[in-house]
Image 1: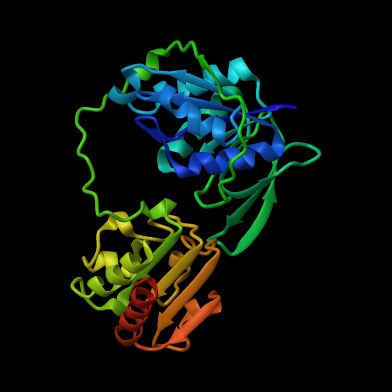
Image 2: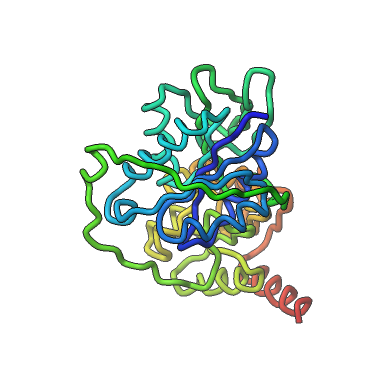
Length: 320
């Protein structure tokens, strides 16, 4: 069975959920071989093996922390040449897409970004994508070279499938360009205690209808009752009511949670482009003609200041 190379997203050895999803998808088309880089790389082996990795390639060097993505591309290329995989899978983060694109150029292969599903095909892996501002769903495959595919978080359920997970050190020679752009400082992001927006299983968002920064406390309360991340529309962000890092949409972040709750969001195409692949969509809006209702699974026509606190209270009551 062909091997599939999976790029591992981890923090000091703690494997992040999108990578485990990639391993689940990789098993559909071959045997997963994982590549873990940087501090704690060897500590990823147990989690990766539990989820199907037959082999774990590791490498640590100061370059991964001191410089931008090129050292990681060098390592991924070295792993590609070592494994000769049927496909390369990378988490669809901003950094992941840049790494994937650079690798595709180097090896002369086609690339598919932001896939939401993956299946085996007669002529290679077939990816599902949501395109043209989420107006169409397409089935896509690479016609040249080894497919390089980035996959959006929450595209597959994580499934355990214990495998050998044999750890092997990867030999990496960094290119001259690896040290071209140096990281001069890092500022840790302040933790809110909520899930990362792009990886969250539930996202609760607020829009223009929230009508003020202070009123986002209502959105946050609902999110906290569900263990959800908080999102915002561009209108809310542009008004200064919520940070840009939480913006969902074509010019913000793209999310694909199991549940998306839109509060006071009209549903402009730019916002829909960032959340339309959500599995279940709920909207609360007092305008019964709002475009968001054309998209939802469940819609509530009502004032969010009445509906959302009641919903939060009911959730907390059932939990308690």
